[in-house]
Amino acid sequence: MTTGADALVGRLHEWGVRRIFGYAGDGVDPILGALRRAAGAVELVTARHEEMAAFMATGHAKYTGEVGVCLATQGPGAIHLLTGLYDAKLDRKPVVAIVGQVVTTALGSGYQQEVDLPVLFKDVCGQYVQEVRTPEQLRHVLDNAVRTAIATSSPTCVIVPHDVQQAEVPDAAPAEHGRITSAPVVAHPRVVPAGDDLARAAELLTRGSRVALLVGQGARGAADEVVRIAERLGAGVATSLLGKPVLDESLPFHCGVMGHLGTTAATDLMRTCDTLLVVGSSDPWTEYYPQPGQARTVQIDLHARNLGAKHPVDVALAGDAAETLRALLPLVHEPAGASQWRDRVRGMREAWDGVVAARVSEPGEPVNPQAVVHALTAYLPSDAQVAVDVGSVTYWYARFLRLPPGVPAHLSSTLASMGSALPYGLAAKLARPDRPVVCLAGDGAMQMNGLSELITVAARWHEWADPRFVVLVLHNRDLAEVSWEQREMEGEPRFPVSQDVPEFPYAQYARLLGLRGVLLDDPARVERAWHDALAADRPCVLEAVVDPATPLLAPRAPDEKVATMRQALDQEGAADVAARVDRQRGQERAS
Image 1: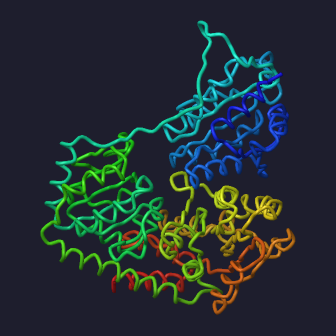
Image 2 (image 1 turned 120 degrees about the vertical axis):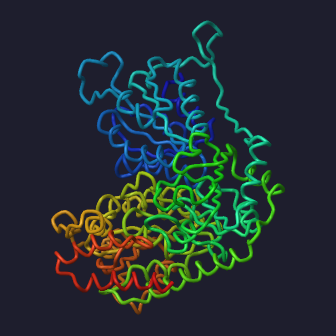
Image 3 (image 1 turned 30 degrees about the horizontal axis):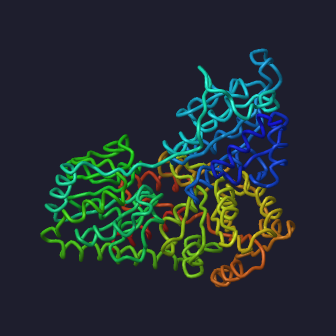
């Protein structure tokens, strides 16, 4: 007999799903049994919490390009999935959530753990949420969920009551009215803009004398085309945070990440360009775009709904980034004045490099966090995979870590949810156990949920072909980004009750789990610490005791913002920290 649960697991396998992330519960017991009977055809990866399972599924989608699948029981298990699924929704990644439910005969009775799951998931999985009421529905509902997730780059949800999981599923149903027979197939179109639109875009770009490119995650797979058109136009390039891994960051016209946590070079590029080409980006930092009327703009995006959504656009090109750039390139000629603009862009980049050198050489109490992240550049393997958490570590990653070409790096960007680095890193490692993984996190994120997922690392690492899995913990006893936002945005002093992070021995905890633990509390040992962590014969936690007073200053911050920040620091009596802010401002003015 084929049960609903067996049919579901078999259909996932037909879709090419080899791994799902979840947590056990009685509402999905039949599915767990089906996974056992499938003898590893579809592996269940058990997280320590359903939220982490959803983050892992999102991470799997981000690192592999495949659909990620997560599994949770009814009631609280289903509710716990929401944060990870919203991460998939906001960063536009295909994830399917499979959720148990109470038996159909009890629905609407207020049964134990009964939650109105279609309503619960309506917003986050708005493209497709379906509760399966009969076993005959299972295959075509799952097909629609997977196909929709892939086609719309979004999360979807399949809700399966317990009795439907147990029920017998007919292997072949007759073709008759009301019976649906579907297939586990999906295809992707070749999307290229209309010829007239390409011609208009080429004319606009060629007439510009100071061209800038803003490159986002939608340009993945189009790095060669982006470089060719940038060289043809003599353009400078900035990236969104999600677009940081797309291009070789050593390129002389690469100005770094744009936005509040970005570089002065990217800010200067956007402030001085007269023409902007946006490729696969819908970056939300609108105050860092060119001012209205400053620059004529062309935008390329596969999803037409993103065109003109964040910045005024003169020519909109709906199409795949690589295909569109290849079609555009023969139509574009080098603008007048391109060589002078190239020199200016190179100067912006060199000035930012000077700021980097100054900031990473500053002393810290005891260690400068900027220097810790910057030092990884020299040690990061060329085949590494990088996962980044949310907080001050995101600033240091955006500004000071130069990724080797082709190294993927992911984070919860649009949702900006703390606690994503460990589940992302695990998903990356499970997908490619032969490649090293480096996770960058703060102590706040580690205490939120990272410590629990280190247990998962300890349980799984013996299976990996390459044991290197390094977790950097910036231990500063502070929710540093929140503290600096409080000062900058509110003009209020840091509130210790809300922003203190309790002491915890992260390296010792790693050793307790049978992992390596490296404690870094001496600035003279930064390079050695990275060497030892990446040379370890097992996963390693690198606990860096860093200075919470290191300013998180936006590039070219307006005087009024700095004045607000100084007002808060004055209330704290932190004259020494205010002096650091002034010093960083001086570094930017000199650049």
